[in-house]
Image (cartoon, rainbow, N blue to C red; front, side):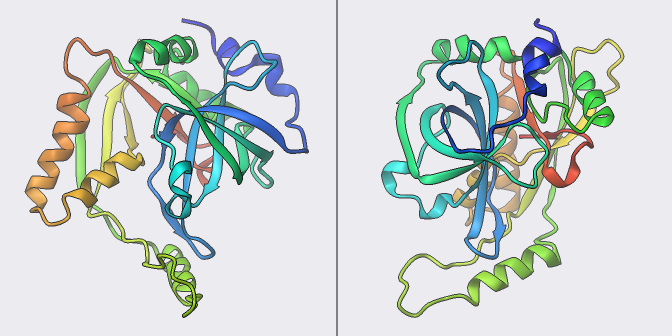
Length: 273
């Protein structure tokens, strides 16, 4: 596998992000579950491979915030769509991959199917180990905050009750609901917390790896629960296990995890997406 320096840019990472907007082309690989927002009701963070013109290598890109609920129908991109959007380097965010998109400029320009087309772009970006990526994040604020890491062994998927929104998150929801305009017919329903949350415990290919325990913040983990809203908790847990263990790790598949950290946790342990 390529070295960490080659994967995440080496000397290129020392070049500051331009202060002006740029037009990006991004292969969407990750859509995180929505989080409460006081202004927009909810916001979504997405990530993927930037395929901007003039670069010889793909680079990881994080786009935030996106109010996915209020996008026009032709803008509601899917995973493995390629989008074009104008974006500005995110202010107040030291993570070099972070950009703030102007969603009024966003268009979907392609979709990558089947997996052979996707892997041609993704395989060269895989990180050697999660252990090394964590070490880098613990040592330097400019360390990579996104990556694709092969899984050597899945130990378990732990599914637990979601604790509900924190007081800070609930305050954002309340602030949004209180902005309701009688003449605004847009969907102002408050974002509901999911019933369950999940953590993978797994090992990467570092010979000394003792295991990683990381949360799943993927859109699909929450969306599946919402689709099964009238089902029993036991049925929802079984469906999550079938989708995120039985299907994802079914031989001869060789899964890898998209990983990324949250801004407030940087440079702590990279979070699982």
